[in-house]
Structure formats: C-alpha cells, structure tokens
Amino acid sequence: MPRLTLDDLYRLRLPSDPRLRPDGTSVAYTLTRADRETDENLDEIWLAAPGQEPRRLATGSLPRWSPDGRTLAYVRAVDGRPQIHLLPMDGGEPRTLTAAPLGAGAPVWSPDGTRIAFAGPYLPHPLDPAAPIVADRLDYKADGPGPLRGITTQVFVVDAASGETTALTGGDLHASAPAWSPDGGRLAFTASMEADRDLAPSGSVYEVDADGGEPKRLTGGDVLFLAVWQVGGRLVAAGMSTGATGHTRLYAVGPDGHEELRTGLDRNVMTGGPGYPGAPPRAYGDGLLFCARDRGRTHLYRFGPDGTAKLVGGGTEEVSVSGVSTAPGHYAYVAATPYSPGEVFLDGARLTAHMPAGLDLPAPQTRVFTAPDGTEVEGFLLRGGSGPGPLLLDIHGGPHNAWAPVFDGVHLYHHVLAARGWTVLTLNPRASDGYGEDFYTATRGAWGLADEQDFLTAVDELVADGTADPDRLAVTGYSYGGYMTCWLTSRTGRFRAAIPGGCVSDLTSLSGTSDAGLLLKTYEYPGDTAAQSPYTRVGEVTTPTLLLHGDADERCPVGQAEQWFAALREREVPVRLVRYPGGSHLFIVSGRPSHRYDYNERIIAWLEQWVSGSPS
Ligand SMILES: CSCC[C@H](NC=O)C(=O)N[C@@H](CC(C)C)C(=O)N[C@@H](Cc1ccccc1)C(=O)O
Image (cartoon, rainbow, N blue to C red):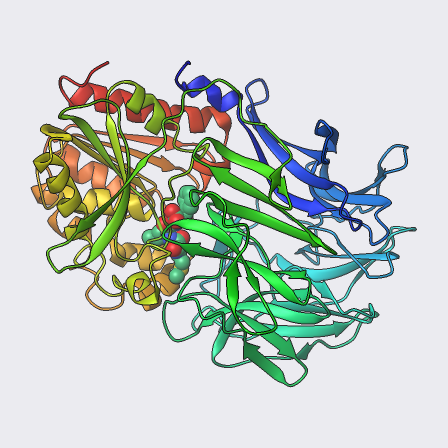
C-alpha cells in the first residue's frame, strides 16, 4: 500500500461539528477540504445516515436543525461575510436569511422554531481600513481578526420568516454564542463587561430577555466563565479559576448563581476549538455527555444524576472526539483515530469513510519515559525503520495542548519522514493536558526550566536503546513547541537541525506584543522572564535553524522569530526565516492550503539538508 505524501493534503476530507436531526435518524456535519485551485479551505454541509451513502447538501458550515427537523440553518459567505441560510429538507433551494453588515455567527434556533439567535460582530459605523488604529486597552487585537478597530460581539435575534434582525445587547463587550431558555423567553451568554477586563481576566454568565432589555448577571467572582449552553432544561457553563492556570470545569448556572458539576475526574473538560478537540456538553437521558482529555486522548463521558462520570463507548482507546450531538436515545460525534483525522459516528457506529482508502498509515507506539526527578512522561513513536536511525522530536504547543496517537491532517511530515526511515517522537511533557491538574500546571513560572529534562530524557533513552542515532537528531515544534525548540538549541548542541514554528524566543517582548500577553505573563510565566526566555542564551546556539512563522500572527508575533533569526545570522549560524503572508497563529491548521503544504515541505527539506545520511 502507498505511503502518505504531501499531495494527500488535497485529498483529505475533515468532518466536524456533527448535528443529529431531532428524530435521531441522520447527522448533518461540516466537511472541509483543501482546494488546490482556489487555495482555500472549502466547507460543505453533508448528511450521513445509517445504511446510506453520505451526501452533500450545500456549501457552508455550522449546520443547525430546526426543532421540527424540517429545516437546516447554516452559514455561508455572501460578499465575503458569513450569513445565515435556511435549507428546507423536504426539497427546494436554500434561502439567505440574514444580511448582517459584518456577518453572522452560528445559528441557534429558538425552541419554537420561529426565531434564530446568533453572536456576531458589530460596529456602529462603516469600517474604514485606512483609519488610524487607536488602543486604550490591551484587548485591541486578536489573532485571526487582527486589530479589532472598535468592533464588538453582540447577541442578535432574527425572525426565521421575515429575516428581521434585532440586537439584544450593545456596548463594550464580546458575547459568546447565546443559549435559549426552554420557554424561549430569554437568552444566556457569557461576556465580560468590566471596564478594565484587559487587566484582570473575567467572564460571567448573563441572561437577557428575548425581546430586549438590560442583561442580568447570573454569576461572578471566582470563576472565569468561557461559554454557556442550554443542556436538558438547565444552563451549563464552562469555566476556569480566575486565580491561576488550571483545568476547565463545568458548572450548573441558575438565577441564584453557579455550582460545579463535580465529575470526579482529575481531567480537563474539553469544549472544543481550533487545535483542541472536544465538544460542548449535551443532554443525554437523565444526564449529560461531555468531553475530557485523558493522556492526550479526548474521550466522551456521561455525567449521570448520581454525580459520576463514565466513559461512553469504551471502544478503541486511541481516539480523539471532537464535536458531539444528541437526540433522545441517540448520540453522534466525530472521532479521529490512528487511521483517520475524523469520521462521523452515530451511537458508536461509524457512518462515514472520508479518509482516502489504501494508505499505509503505521500506528504510533506508546512509550513512557522517566525524568530525573521521577516524573513519568508519555510519548508516541512513529517508527520509520529498525535500528538506530534519524530521530525528529516534535513538541506540541500550549503548553497545555497534547499529542494523541491519532492521525491529524496538519503534521503530514510525520508520515512522510517515517516512510523515509525517520522515527518521529511526539512527547507529552509536564504541562501537557490529560495527566491531572498538578501535571498541567507544573511549568507555571518555570517555562523551559521545568520541562527541558522531559525532552532530553526521552531522546537519551531512545539513543540508549538503539532507536535513535545520536548523530542524526532533530527537533521541531509549533507555538509553545517553537518556544521549546529555541530553548533546547540554546542549551544543547546535540540536535543537527531545528525548526521552530510560530515560535516564542523572548517572553519579555511577548508579554507586550501578544494578544494574550498579559494572560500569559500572569498565568503561565510569572516571575523571571529572562530566566524563562530562550533569547537570554541565544549566543550559545549552533544548530542550523529554519524559522517558519505566520506573518499576521498576533498570538506569537513574527518579531519573536525575527529576533532569533537576526541573533543567529549575526553569528553566522545557518538560519532561514520563512514568513507566511496573512498567516495567523493557526495558519498551519486553517490557513491557505499552499502555506500548509509549504510548511510541511520545508520541514522535510531542512531535515534532509542538515541531518546527514538521513535515508532519502
Ligand atoms: C493564558 S493564555 C492561553 C494561551 C494559549 N495556551 C494554550 O495552552 C496559547 O495560545 N498558547 C500558545 C503558546 C503561547 C502563546 C506561548 C500555543 O501553544 N498555542 C496553541 C495554538 C495552536 C493550536 C493548534 C495548532 C497550531 C497552534 C497550541 O499549539 O496549543
């Protein structure tokens, strides 16, 4: 069987955001593919049902069933702005429902199906791209959108028949996706309305009358609420401590405040986002379904009225669930496995096979390494051959992300290198997600200082056991992984090649230039930023280094790579900087296909250039 090649980037199809029809008979979902001609990632709405071939319904994303299951709302761009459309499922053409000046967000049907709510961008005047950009607070920009220019995010309600749209909120806030009350009389959302929220992170659950009025604050204080949903007749919100980095938890929210839903799991609740699998909580029977990450894998759990959480399905352990939807007696989800970046499942049975057939995708082997301080760290080895060979250490970001032993459509170079005889080690060092909250917070205030030993221990063990050739070691990583790549090459010369992607080199400048700068400094790396910055010892780097960076990255601004590039070039260390025009921090996940292809291709080329003798 053929091994994967980079051209498979254009053959991959990624399902996401599954939505069960209210009668449980079929699942609508978004299917995304990279289009070579337009150099865009194209989204389509598909429908899958037991015993039927999945079929395409429309161009668009974010499918949402009307309560009677007869209409599918979804979002599609009109003149470059996402607008809500309605597709009658008994036949006929879709209808454009909204004409929001800056676009509409995910549709949320009212319980009676007569209205649709959404959170969307708002500006009280026409947007002038040439106008000066004025900032009075730190939250003046965001990775992806860039400078916000005064745009806020408000809650809107649109009449499903007439399209008449009303803003329910206004003012200086960024509302989350809204959630209807069971009687359709109110909408809940999360936001922070504090004037100095840029200095002290906060987020509360609010409720506003569906016919307008002043939002009422339902929560406050010790929990930073991130999102809220209507789950089985009650509000359930996701939140985290306002005091320090930690796990995300679920809370029941009512008119008198909030109460944690204690799952008994020392695991991070995963509600889903770019690069982070998971899904919002969903009603299921007399309990709810939620996702949590366990040892890098994201699983589906059922939280029952008895207050316990039990694994759902319990099938293959090597799975990452992203996207969950329920209907009475049924549940649907998308799951990645070692052989597919994602397929749609209904009640545990696979409905789709979007992964190109016939590819030889070796499954990674799980290994556990023990650091000098006794900490055990788990990793996954994609073996390219037997006997000592070239080894690529690939470091995930976050630092609270995590690798899982599943196939993803981002790091295609893993399989290309393995086919050429490389071994790829994806390691979950301390701070990785899925190993308990103490492990998750173990690098706070000690970036690099605490986790360096985990990486070097794993590499040393693989050299000692004959897996890795000590003269053919290489390191790469993105975001925090890029930070760690810089850090390791400033402390050891053992790597023959290094590729920091979306990197961080100087925590002091990062604090003032990242869109999350103050959060990072407060929650992640308080204390001595110089001691935690790779740049402090950049003068010791000798490893040929390729820097890959999104030119419009506002999370880790491109200056982080430029500083590293200049410092190495001045000392004539072989170095190259590649900037991707328009690329945000997430460009390797959702950026231009040609940029994603180029990112993978350059990694392979740099490794083969500088790791002599690597089998080609
Ligand atoms: C307290 S602010 C939260 C920052 C957030 N942390 C997540 O764990 C974050 O953005 N971290 C960055 C690194 C940091 C800016 C130094 C990061 O590593 N980002 C993500 C982004 C990403 C995800 C998937 C694919 C590409 C990039 C990550 O890698 O986990």
